[in-house]
Length: 343
Ligand SMILES: [Zn+2]
Image (cartoon, rainbow, N blue to C red; front, side, top):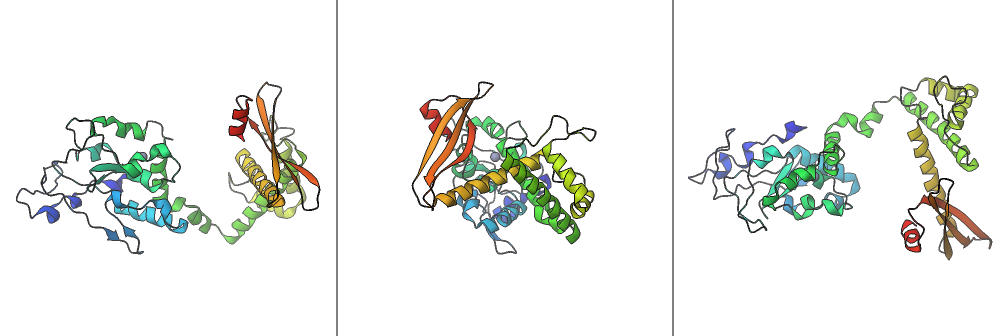
């Protein structure tokens, strides 16, 4: 990944600043460059016609692009590399009242840092590329720009030590985006028609099991699901029964590679969640534009945890009063305001 972002002399090299008598090329030894003439960075249009604004300040947000184009735009910016201005002397615009300023050496300390010559602020490229408009606390390095030069440690704090920090997750997404082999489309294209067919058979078998268990309100799992277990839980036992009695499913499961059996607990949860989403959609369709009531009540379970139940109460098309259970949510307390927030 870092090979794309090695600081290159192109933004501060002699081709840009040769008009200045003080100008010198950016060298590996950090030779000072003209403090007077800020290097200009050309905007680009890549081979696919995507316009790439060099100044991060002037770019439009990724979410403003059409969803189908967003990954292409991200990839184009990643291949273009971060905008880095190399100057000996940056202007002072620190709000602290202390004469602090940005330094080109910070690029080495902080990967992905970009500089906007328009406003003399810095941004982080991955956070810009994967900003979804939701994380209001993460907009400094996406929208406003950072210029509290006296708080340099904030740059490090933003990155965070945790590999799952927001910033590090964005970096990982950039990494994945550049690695075409990991994309779902690329992965699917590597499968043969027979493998795709088998996958579909396994998925359908698992989904049928999930629908059956959800309708009956039955438990999916058992305390021992190992190969030698006498009873591996309803879900696995049902899959096993299908495998034994249906040749097509048996063959598809036999052909499954390693973790592609569609029986893992994560897959089970995923399928159950999909069923829940589809059920709620169906209920919402059933209500249509009619009037409905939301009934919210709480009760403690056997381990004294408060549970909140949400039920929709309405009259259907045939004139019958119907009540549909939407869900059960764990709540910290049962005051009216907490229940309102939880619902
Ligand atoms: Zn970031």
